[in-house]
Image (cartoon, rainbow, N blue to C red; front, side, top):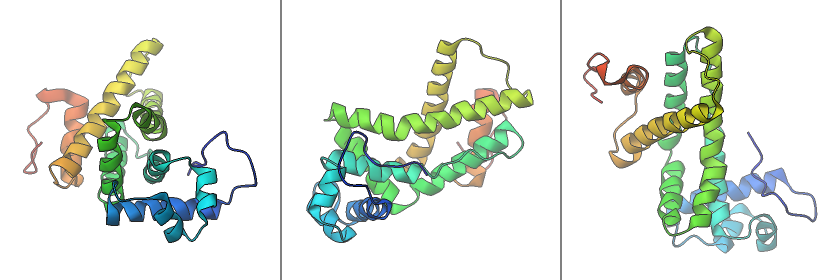
Length: 211
């Protein structure tokens, strides 16, 4: 799991245990209190650290909450299941399992809602949550090309556009399914989704779970 230590701070050495406690306390507070009632003072109390310890690490609520949510998605890994379709199914199931957790649902929806009024927060979400997950798309496509499942794509701009599109399709579909529609992204749904993602609307009709 990558470090969630904000860059550019100086001073006494950081405690990984304190960082983990603060981020966990932030997620707990989001579930119990919501964005509007969450305060850094409450998070410090829950984490068992001094307020000064927290303020040395995060300058405000926005960056703290984004890092707390981003830490959950750091758990995502691209499994090697032998084929592009199986790899996609594996990572989508992981993604759906994370979104099923109350702290992920509360945290992600809170920061996305708040970012509609805060450009700096939107950029932090992109840098801390979105961009690292796009690396999984790059990894998956590289692995598929090595297996001979995808052709070479020498144009860097085309690669970037394709990665953005794939990420938007996967993240958008799973977030809508789990958080907006409140429906399960179970194995059957993920198989149907993967088939449509790889083969388009001309794919065979889905099973009973629907699209």
